[in-house]
Image (cartoon, rainbow, N blue to C red; front, side, top):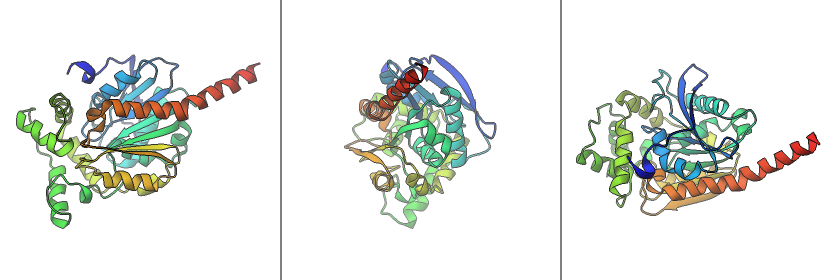
Amino acid sequence: MSGPYAPPVPVRELTAVSADGARLHVEVHGPEDAPAVVLAHGWTCSTAFWAAQIRALAADHRVVAYDQRGHGRSPVSARCDTEALADDLEAVLDAALEPGRRAVIAGHSMGGMTVMAAAGRAAFRERTAAVLLCSTGSSRLVAEATVVPLRAGRVRTALTRRVLGSGAPLGPVTPVARAVLKYATMGAGSAPHRVEVCARIVHACPRRVRAAWSHVLDSLDLDEGVRRLEVPVMVVAGDRDRLTPPVHARAIAAGLPRCVGLVELAGVGHMTPVEAPELVAGCIRELVGTYLVPAETENHAEHAEESA
């Protein structure tokens, strides 16, 4: 892709090693001494999913994006569970940021679940100034999904489980493939170039990785993680999201100790960072300006006084 959705060239690339030895591809953008932002993508995606936010923020933020295990350029791992996702996020924070440095963390879909899985960990709390959760849920993902156009119930849940858990190859990005992906994951008004970039990213995910993580999402229960997410959290959802409908965003916002905003976007589906790139980047910038920069300024002043 060209334009804002072309993957930006990072300042540097590195490999983070998780607790079980899994290796994670990490990209770092922007000035070294700028406020830090960490981006965690969702199921079947990659760092390329955040291209628009990276371009919007990298001029005055230190932006770290990484490929979840098995996605993008991170090798496939035998371990697939939410604790592994939390381990991976901790490994990325340790590898990409200096000791003690805090960041605003944005997670989309499975990336948001990664944050919820890590919420109770001391290392996560020490490194996180605020969180943005985009198009995500903490439990009942298959039961609440509306990808299959039937009334809620056992039949819809069973069919949804089969659709999302399929290991069938997606094949090339054809007009039919784009139409299917748009129906399942995006709003009806999404521009063709946005559908194209999402299709290319999703179709690049290995089918066994897609299937393996679908089973994890099927049995997801991170409601306790929501209650333990004590940093300021902003929640963003599309009102046309069929994978994680707004009922999830509302439940998360109600369960958070420090919800600082719930934004529901009219006409937007599941792929909020691509469908509403300026708004998502603006939410990240707002969280940085409110919860990270003032604290960093205060810390610098304290250090200066101690040195004097």
